[in-house]
Length: 190
Image 1 (spheres, rainbow, N blue to C red):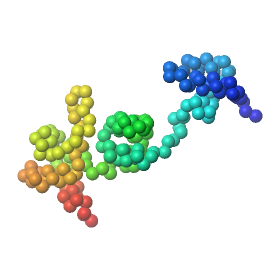
Image 2: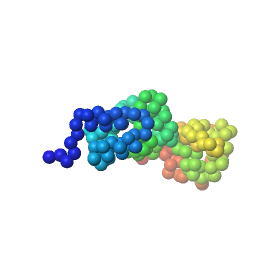
Image 3: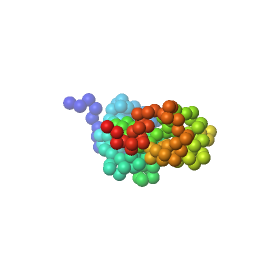
Image 4: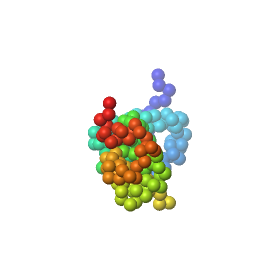
């Protein structure tokens, strides 16, 4: 026999409490007192009758959402969330972060940040930023913060093109040699 029994009237009241756009916590406290039940029982019942969605309920990612995620994986999760919202999908930042991690993104993207590019070329980040500003190295702006700091994303083909067009700017003694060979060979190294 169930310890807590709900009537249709109680369900209606619970539905109404969660349907109001204002903060439902004070109303829920009053409802818990009225029903003489703990709030967590009311929460479970609200999930069961569909008044709210549980944070544990998993929504399967649609192929359209995954396509948007793959296309924008180099961006910050908050930016991806906004792009998903523009397309009509609702995902939390933590859900996006977790999905990117499970799909091994952005490690499977063909590119890198400006910091990683500097490390790869064996130079200071400022040198890479100068290459980007002088248009020698093409890069996408993926984020600009309030202080004006810009985060760049550089595709591998742009790094390859930079190396081919500017061999005198690349010190082969400083580059990460295995990645350099793979990059120049376009991943065709065995």
